[in-house]
Amino acid sequence: MTIETILKRKGSDVTTIAPDASIKRAADWLRAKNIGALVVTSENTILGLISEREIVHAFSRFGEAAGSMPVKEIMQYGVTTVSPDESINRVMSLMTHHRVRHMPVLRGGKLVGIVSIGDVVKHRLEDLELETNVLRDAYNAAR
Image (cartoon, rainbow, N blue to C red; front, side, top):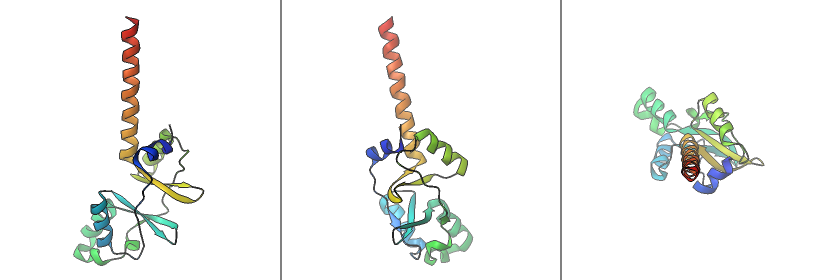
């Protein structure tokens, strides 16, 4: 199974934000879209990510002033990306190794989606459930 499988199911919509946008604006987008991370872009170039984690840390560190700070002050730079052809097991390994919860998906250098650890776990659980049902049916047929 590949990341393309997940994107086909969940869609390829990716919410982006400019590096000069305020942290408050980023938080508003996360709430409005019910998502956990935004891809930070400038002229179609991916600069990094900003997630709920960075926003919480910013408010803890800077207080209310964090809301007016630009995203570029707290975002993750140098984010790990994957291709749609990448295996789900490989992406799970990358997420674990890099300790990240979101990975932008690029095809030919172009942003075509984003996957979260939740997307990967959900897909893996569905695979395990299907496998269990097939094995149960085979067992019952053999009896």
